[in-house]
Image 1 (spheres, one colour):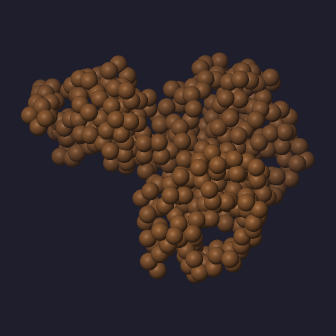
Image 2 (cartoon, rainbow, N blue to C red; image 1 turned 180 degrees about the vertical axis):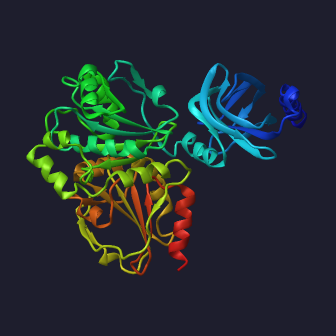
Image 3 (cartoon, rainbow, N blue to C red; image 1 turned 180 degrees about the horizontal axis):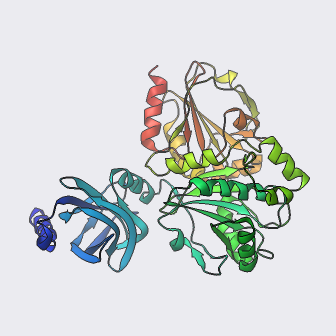
Length: 457
């Protein structure tokens, strides 16, 4: 094996031999799979941002299941920026920078011997993120096919490589949908180049491509709108528990999808847009919509979404501010009992706010259930935001989790803790003060660190 590895490295170096007079850096290619697999000999190619495709070297070998990884190749490349890799006919966009005298890692996700769509990660942070995604730590957006306002296909492939802010709306809504559009107008002014905005209708009978195109022109929207058949839209929104609707009857939802197609955060409710809203949107609001505008909705707005976009650009979610005292509460539980914060006095707490419509909540729940308990020295408190008791129990039963959850039916406890998107986890010290608020899905390293912090003080 050692001799074979040396041979592969040698091939990689020789491939670029004519250009080695230029400054060079090192590329380390590793691979991981959703399950253990084997990659038969396949040539890795790479595309320079200002040039053409070039072959790097053949790679082959056993590929372990993520988060384990296998080194497939170490080679030398000319300094510069590269924007895509190819393997076995599959091409994936990736932002890869080779710097003189430095090593750049590249992770390839492999399934059944082939490159997984969207699974190319460059740089230490991206590789760590990729190992989490490939191993199933994050919930993947299911396959979908829609059309945009121009009638062009809108699917998983067309959003791959971009962090996506997606919102449910329809043009016939006069209550909260105009506020979501105002939010998008605000986001568009500060959106990172790597991100995109997407509003997907819940009313296919009204919102045809031509209707959406006209709407976009009227409000000056430069982002993408999506529509499709009732079946296509129902399938798209089902993971978020959003039903098709018309008029002012709808479920207000916004989600963040990372560049590899994984659902990272879910917002529910009405955004705060302030006075930065075009007059034509104000005049389209119903009396209820005007009330939501004046009251600030549910308190979250474009700064929060932009902060969350920045957070999902790395392997860990950025924390909200620490400090303060945990707000008192008493709630009924899914098993018919009740529980208050006072009942838990003197115990370190991990309070997890979630809902059944939130894919990242589902993905992180088994880790929380397994890791937080008597053996950790902390108490896990599950707080369901807005679901019925029946839905809560069905959700937990489906995951094989046998502890009850508290029912925050009117979302008042979540609001008192500053919860504006899900999931969020609040780590509370034994003295009742907050050590940290974790935005988005918690991973094992963050959880272990926080449990250590809570129990060592």
